[in-house]
Amino acid sequence: MRLPLPRTRPRSLAGQLFAMQVVLVAAVVAGCAFFAYVSGSGQAKETATRQVRTAALAIAGSPSVREAIRTPDPSAVLQPYAERVRKDTGIAFVTIMDPHGVRWTHPHAERIGESFLGHTARALRGETFSETYTGTLGPSIRVVTPVRDGGRIVGLVSAGITVERVSSQVRAQLGALGLAAGAALALGGLGTYVINARLRRHTHGMNAAELSRLHDYHEATLHAVREGLLMLDGQRRIALINDAGRELLGLAPGTVGRRVADLDLPAPLTGALLASEERVDEVHLTADRVIVVNTRPVVGGERRGTVVTLRDHTELQALSGELDSERGFTQALRSQAHEAANRLHTVVSLIELGRQEEAVGFATAELELAQALTDRVVGAVGEPVLAALLLGKAAQANERGVELVLAEDSLIDDGALPATLPQRDLVTILGNLVDNAVEAASEAVTGTPADGVPVQRTGPRPARARVTVTALAGDGELLLRVADNGAGVGPAEADEVFRRGWSTHGAGRGLGLALVRQAAHRNGGSVSLERGPEGGAEFTVRLPLPQGSGARKEAAL
Image 1: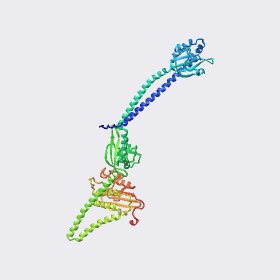
Image 2: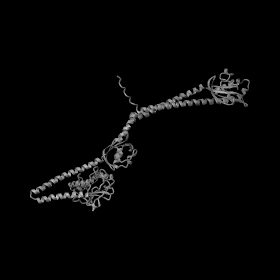
Image 3: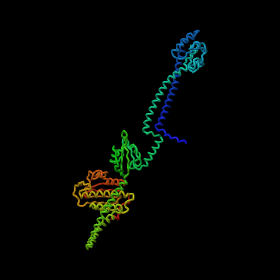
Image 4: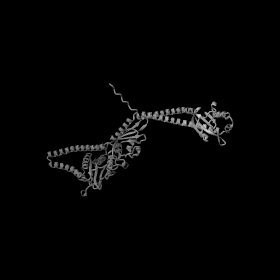
């Protein structure tokens, strides 16, 4: 039975690049060496041709050569002269011959008188030419030129150098070239190894397929994760951000590379993103959302940046607010049930004592008081959610000894508010404003808030805590105004009340007013703070309504 051979892991990307670069460097060095060899060989031949051409022309133009040719025995004079020139110039041979090609000189004296081996026709026509020809000394590069005397060609001169000597010169150069090429190859290989060793560290030894798969997973993860992911480099610039991160921060595409300080984010959020220390589950507000921010520095010998995760808690915060309201309603109902039981016992006791008329009067008065408040709210506020919220808040306020009053000019007809205006935002706005007003009015009367810190008030303390609510839909807008007779807000704090964490009880507690401004901004509205008619704070929220919305004129009359 043959066992399957284990699959070998593909070579890493760094290894592949190293092999490719080594081959490339070797090919480049080999190509350069070959080009240098060919070029050097051509230059050597060209140099040899120039050398022998110069020698041949100098000999042919020498007057002593012409005089020797006129003598009966030219060889006696020309042979020593030719040998001297050959040795001085370092060429292979100098041959002087008559127009018929019979040698007068030769490096080998026994060859004198023999016919020249080569072409002479062009020289006899008066030309000087070069050729490679195999003669008595072997293949040689030679130049043949005529000797003129009074316009007549009286002889020929051939000077040459053997191909073997030229090749030996090229081989000597080739040795130096080989050393240079070897040094270049070694240096290139070393540089390639250093570069690829660094690449291997950065790619963690992964091959191209693994890197491609990692990139695909990376892109898929960025688009699939519903939490915001933000990565900052060491210069606090955005190195990476996913779709959810852009949506949560309200950023447009193309923000990669921009500095966090230039993104026009709220100052507390910008400070959290730029912080050098780790941040865990910090709640921050943008123009439209409540987000939870976690940051963690990325370090590795040096500071490399920060990883930031963002979670959307807008819906959760709204649900928490609604849950708090429901809890308040439950407590109020529990208290009212307890109070109703006490009143019922009172009525029963009066009947047992035979005081039926007083029992009926006591029960009727309580019913009329409760029904009057319900009729006032339901008659003025036709929006069911707002009506229910006001009735619940009135019960809560009554439990704290605060009178909640609906202003006489309040009027919201049923159906006056468009479906595009979220009811949850209305609950957030009015519920938080009423809660803050009830708390401020209660503390102003008692002088002792829940945290035990005395309330600072410049005017006289009111006899009864009161909160006045105005709800009016008309003239293309929804007006919600909540005023109290509490201590109010000082001018120095007017600009800070809507900041996350602001509270009269200390930093880090307030979030309701920040949510109010956020909800108003989300629906294209505004919120303002002024001093109320009774000395407390008066918050006014204005939300735009489509044309045709608002209270009916006949209802206002």
